[in-house]
Amino acid sequence: MNRRRKSPLKARQSAFERQGQCCFYCKQPMWINNPADFSRYFNLKESQITPLKCTAEHLHAWKDGGSNNRENIVAACLYCNKMRHRRTREMDPLIYQDFVQRRLSARRWHGIVLIDLY
Image 1 (cartoon, rainbow, N blue to C red):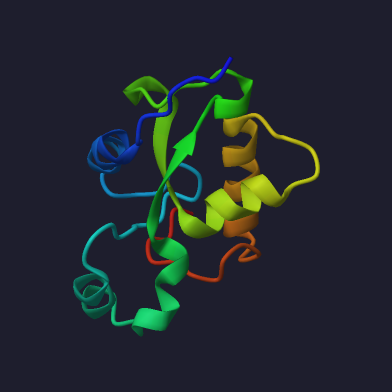
Image 2: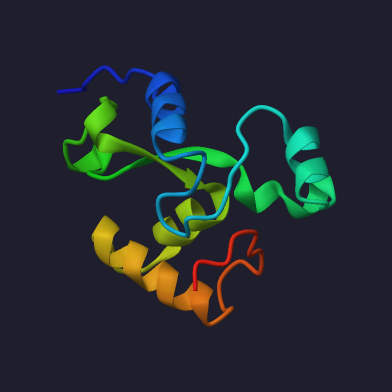
């Protein structure tokens, strides 16, 4: 039985705003619609900010019965989202968040620290 998949765009936008425009995992600022303004604000080249593009991340995966509703979608930067899904073993979102925070504090994550949380 196939479930009909709705687009997570509204949920992504809502999560982006709810999270203060910061990634759920690394807590760094993200951009969603205007990369030029973001790169100017942080004095970075547009090519440097690609990893910080906002994506929709399912806390409970679609393949495991998750949905695109607001409670299941968080905003995550492209880098954190990609790295989570490249892992050979799936990691709980909150455990992954802690993992990312430890790596970021050791300067061993995506190399972009716009807001130093430590």
